[in-house]
Image (cartoon, rainbow, N blue to C red; front, side):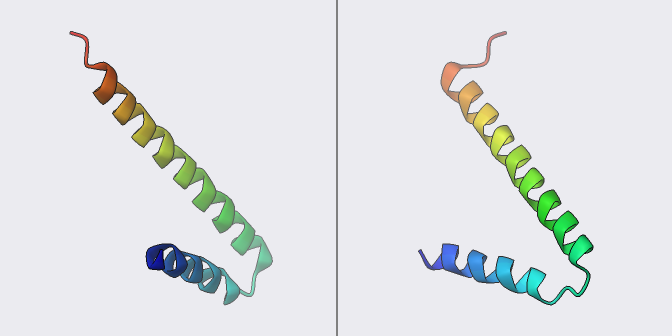
Length: 55
């Protein structure tokens, strides 16, 4: 649980010091897009691992 709280604090503090709201918005969108791509890749890996790798 402390890891999630640390990540939440890191996320909020990283964008609070930005003075340019446009840059902060772009960085937030890029962060969520990167996280979504990573989760899709992890899902695909485990799906292939569970169902087997056909030759």
